[in-house]
Length: 289
Image (cartoon, rainbow, N blue to C red):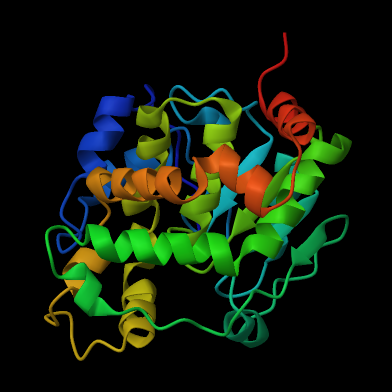
């Protein structure tokens, strides 16, 4: 799977990307529009995966371009072209945010010069309750699913933030789960928020996964059906679970504020970082004068 496409003459604007990302998930994205989007920042060409982008190139992002990359999983291993692309991006560490079962079934590829980091999460593969996604746009389901990410994957998130804090802000890294959408989206939102991004910028990055996952539509549909134990795509709540809407992200952010006092509170009170650590993480993420 590759996002490599010719670069458009004019990169798409945030408004153009947002409009395309708002397309209902049941409707395949037009091929020409998809090609234009995937060849426009913040998306980057990374063979063998999908939904790959540079957090520093999200419109409005304060993160230094070329530092923090996110993607989906490496569905079929890593080809020589994929290894070359990682080297070209300068990636030195790959943080795997997948469950025990996912990691065992498809371990990350071994890449020369790249450290693979996977911290065993707090539980086995979780089963999503579709009942929680039925009401409204599924806000309650997303809130509970994403709060669970902060709890279950706390060890992996801590390791990633430690790497940024400990003088490794100069070393590009990539983090991913299977779809590069939910667990990866939570961590991307955390990093952008810690770096000082606006809520609009964080929400835009979140919803861009609607575009980035399109090349893996069939694989991810099968993954979602299996993970949710839905009988079919018509099962109540399933459509909402597949959809990405800013209202769902905003509901999650509000829940983080209620439970932790915001992402900074999560990092300090739950992950155990100090205020000094938090300042170092921010300094290592943002553009330097």
